[in-house]
Amino acid sequence: MGTGVTTAANYTISESGKGTLATNPTSVALVSGNTYALTWSSGSLANAADVTITVANAQDLAGNVVGSPNSGLYIIRAILDVGAHVKDFLAGVHNHFRFH
Image (cartoon, helix red, strand yellow):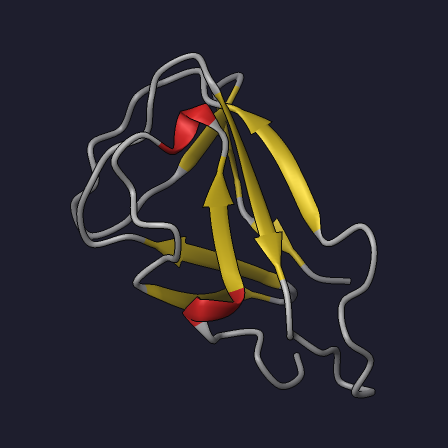
């Protein structure tokens, strides 16, 4: 991907499901293809609540800034304490924020 995709400060988490997580992840890493994992080093998500992940200032390979929509709303169905990684589970399915 392009500039800013792995810059943690370009991602924010909000809504009541944010729990005790910091607003920005600690890091962003390529999983494979266009899939990236957001990682928080401490904190926990709130159970049965919404979170919104928003990205800003990230570009695709052609240099186009990620436009609208630039966020996704997720419902947290399972609480996971944060250790090395935070993983969002939606109805039991592991999901990552994807760029296309």
